[in-house]
Length: 103
Image (cartoon, rainbow, N blue to C red; front, side, top):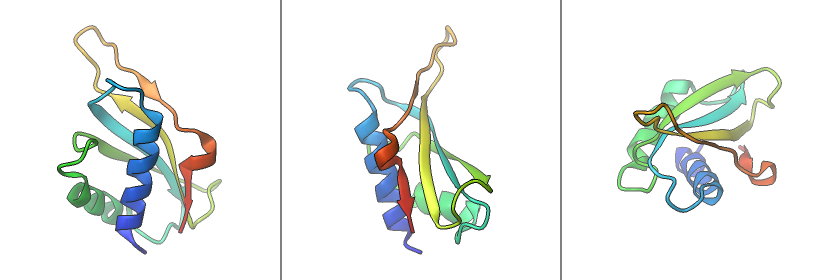
């Protein structure tokens, strides 16, 4: 399992889905199968090492495991901006056709 490939996929999907001026992101939400080959800690640790000095460096991953997902698939489901003082923060959704990675 190549964590760099996973990071690249997440990064590319997120950047392509965000309009200009929408940074910084608080969370990137992904969904993987119940028996995805990497643990949540392995995915998070790899993501944290690779995200620094990138345009998504502020974002943390929120990982959902779902029995409805293929065990070898990862889907970027949405991205959330930080909530401001008034409670406003936008959620963005990627295009379905590019959101899923099969590993």
